Image (cartoon, rainbow, N blue to C red):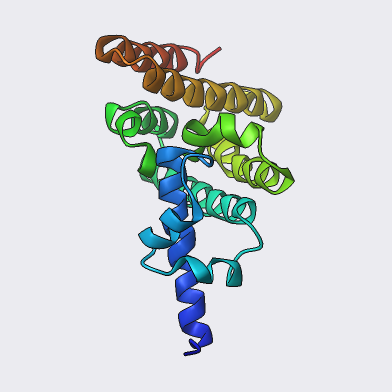
Length: 192
């Protein structure tokens, strides 16, 4: 039985959403097409009607996850106009974010795997980074545009590194210490 174009588009979105969460939770290599299709409540056979390859899906799922996270950052910044930078840090450097990679930042969950990915995945991550940097640069008070951009790049690298390291250590106290220390340091460098 053929499905309508609307249903096919809906199915495609379900696959992308399921893949985005599963990739962040288990990594690109840690999950197979059959598992992704099962999570989307679809049959494995329909996969190649939607995507050229698993890498194609990885790139599209990464784009979607990053765009949603960037939109969330925009809402956080807009909701705290006088303290947007602090609000962004407080939202990112949390035990909740650390403990739920499937719903967290794709940079922290998949950055090291994306580095070994193909051109489409690299492009998704490069394109996906820009909105985060724009929000951070706008949230950093004062300074020249070039200085705010530099600070935004350094802040993003510190945030992703902090969550990645906090997830990796396996020691709750040390993990919490990492998040708290990076939070304090980044807040302390806003005026520099």
